[in-house]
Amino acid sequence: MTRITHRGECRCLEPWTGSSVLLGNTPQSVALERHVADFLDMPEALLFPTGWAAGYGVIKGLVRPADHVVMDGLSHSCLQEGAQAATHNVHRFHHNALAECRALLEEIRAHDAHHGIMVVTESLFSMNSDSPNIVALRALCHELDATLVVDVAHDLGNLGADGKGVIGDQGMLGHADLVMGSFSKTFCSNGGFVACHTRALKEYLRFYSPPCIFSNALSPSQAATVLKAFEIIESAEGRRLREQLLGNILELRRQLEEAGFEVYGEPSAIVCVKIGSEALARLVSRHVQDAGRLANLVEYPAVAKGQARFRLQVMANHTHGNIRDAVAALKAANAAGRSAFDRLGAAWLQPPEPTARWH
Ligand SMILES: Cc1ncc(COP(=O)(O)O)c(C=O)c1O
Image (cartoon, rainbow, N blue to C red):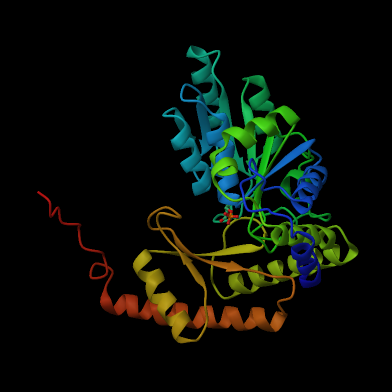
């Protein structure tokens, strides 16, 4: 990876400082766009400086004020912000609630036959480690003349035997209208992409998506890093790493459950451990740190109030010893945190009501 990265940097002494519209493309980025499109079985792909920019940009670039966005309520911040920046007509359905999504689309179409509707979801919602039925969503979109966007940031490259993620497992490669993703998970780099079905749409996005005009393009070394990551993902080594990863995920989930924890969703590289109250979770988190460990604590607004959780990230090269160690540390911190919580009393730990100082 390092070697290729350096080669990428050396090869590209030609200028790349500029956005994708203004001299920002390089041989590496053009090759990467082609590779992303081919990997996803989509005709075209466009790079963005980050995954966040891709999520924001695909919605802001395509949706006009009179159009509608219908989105899973748990969609990532980049998608929510993109929708809000594009139109006031943002409709949210409860997480993975297909029937509610249908009802929203039917209601919109009942009084607006002409404007665009973009339906937005993720292939793997990391906080819950679950997935929508993309086949059904796509059929619904086609029935009611809507455009389906799927964010594949979390599973692309690391889930499924060949790394094609949930859309691969559901037989949906090449079938969503738009696929966006990030290189910041499996691909070891900054960067994001939107894959689409026509060259015209790609070029339209390049010129109307703000991050493609007003933000510097992916650097050659980042593009070369991602290309190398694809090489590994598509090799026998990649297949072995995914098998190892899945083994570790299953082992971590098994040990956590054995230790009395509840884990969210289906097996994926993000294992979220249920805690609940924010006050309790912060006490447990403090004990995790006191034990010299680090576990990301996620609470509102990243998840709903009262649903705080630890978010553990599993890698292929973790050992079973690492996993045992992590579970033991979390178990001890949980016990210590809970006893402090009981001692202090939940009421004492509630944050004070905010005072309206400007009244
Ligand atoms: C679902 C999802 N979409 C988009 C992003 C943004 O990706 P990036 O980190 O490349 O900006 C993330 C990263 O947190 C994500 O989880």
